[in-house]
Image (cartoon, rainbow, N blue to C red; front, side, top):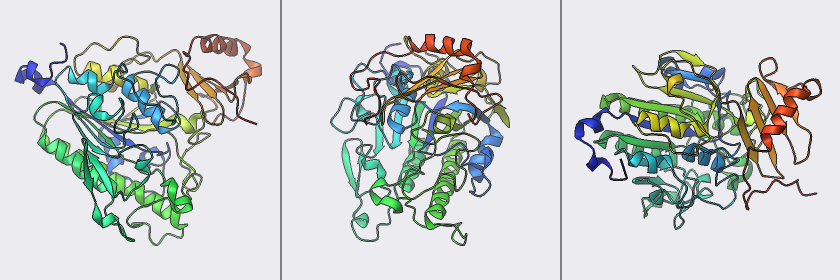
Length: 435
């Protein structure tokens, strides 16, 4: 179709294309939502979304920290091939095709609200350089730590918040992002793709042990919990209301809209929060920065009444790099060549499909780690040259028993795959942790 945009499409063809929305939480654990077993944090809107849609129990983030995870989602490549494989100062290049650039060829208008980790203002990875038509959010990933910003970006222009300059700031960024997302949805005239990238419940790392920032701790003010944990719970419940507001705006438009709610990686131990307090990783081992299941298995709920079955639960394994080809199929486009992902649209519409033979992750903080899922098997290498740990996720989802010694054939098969799983990247060599 080429890159001619909506003007090249007949109006009727544009109307047939579904809208696409991704709502991304930040550091939200698999066990932090009621529909995933959380008992103390209230998430009625997201729980209702799960009742009306499909809840996934084997959905995987692209990585165990935010920038590479989001890069996998936006480019359809896993961390063995993606341009960004860590939270270091790399960004997307002109040749790195994004979901937005792809969907623009089908006439989609692309919006991003909140956090963008693919490149700050002035780089080739800035959203307006990568197919985004409207951006309202932070300057950079580091800037996204603050919940009370003094300034945000609207496209390339600055929006200032003088009330946040004093000792008692009161303009809360997630509230701004929700309002802007709702406005974008209400004003849309053609098919659109919208990312709502909340920073909830990421910590403001610059505030040390007081990093769980929220206007108030309701409805948990009377709970006998540490203040940071009351704040953490309040952040999630406040985001839950924001999700409800976004879905209500979608309902009012009356147009076919696919919505995916998920998280970019597992729960954190930052800002004074203890992930064990609410059992944020559920039955899974590990948290953010781990390649065990708790660091990369995430909540994911798909919602599209009339197309995605209601009250469905799927154990079909998929990962963020499957989203680009999925959205291509939604838009009637061929999937770009060379992707690691494959469309999960059959699963989303209640049909069966085979999963990937292998899923691959690598991570490069404090040395390099690798992980592979192969059917019911999960392998983890905690350092280059270290022996593979092997777990059977079907009988041991918590990865408690390393059975590598009992299954040398499986270890050999995964070792052979690892020789082909990645390409070299100058910024992310496989390396041991410093002494």
